[in-house]
Length: 332
Image 1 (cartoon, helix red, strand yellow):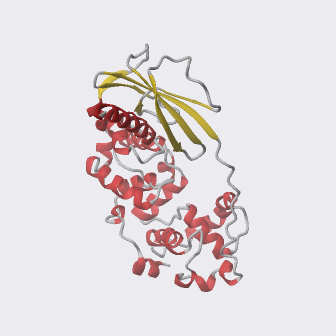
Image 2 (tube, rainbow, N blue to C red):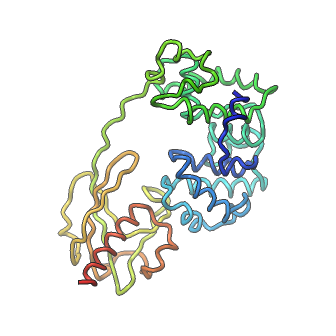
Image 3 (cartoon, rainbow, N blue to C red):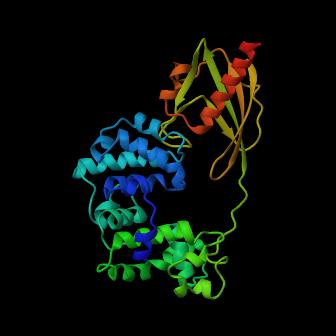
């Protein structure tokens, strides 16, 4: 596996050196997000916050601005909180599993990734790619969600045996093999360096291992967004630390499980509809326009300043819809 990695590994921006800070940042960004999506965000983030100190001392507003569009904003809050915690505790990233697990937002996977990849310690970070490789290798027919727990005792023994090898390269080889070769669909078994040892391959069970629970159908929810304008200014409110978009700015938004009428709210006109898909539900938002703040909390900002605000992709859609309709009316 190590030889295969040396010959075939991909040089990602976070692999240019073995900086624990960059490994930590990359692993947080890669949660629920593809490598190609993460690359430009990682480069921009590291350019602005090149080390633990700069991130720990940053304003969360600026962190969220750089994060906008990447989604799952709770990750950005925990990243910032984790940096502040580490800087306060010892001004460096801990070098032990116990120390890393005390950091807000760092769990077993991320801590093992930091220790193995950056520090060369004998740990195996178990993500979806690694679970898929190991479950096929050992022919584990269990449901995907149970595999990580079932693999844990074996991994602890496995990690002890890694000390004489290259733990960092081995961990990355498992991750890369799962991403590039041992893919969820149509695995490229002919390119696999451990094909001769693979139980799933020998029994032609690659497409059945690991098993996955059927995903429930995403529920449909409905929202109303209210665009309050005053000249060239638009009203924005900042979300709290909880909810869909913690800490981000946006127009007032109300989300319900059922379609609702908007006649109880004062508005000038209907702008249009925006559709957006979250991880666990779909959202259909009706956008309404008003020329008064109608007692809403928040602040008015010049529309030209919005690029400096941390806005979610949904809010960008809503505001773009309003600007598009406004420009049409101006042109007419």
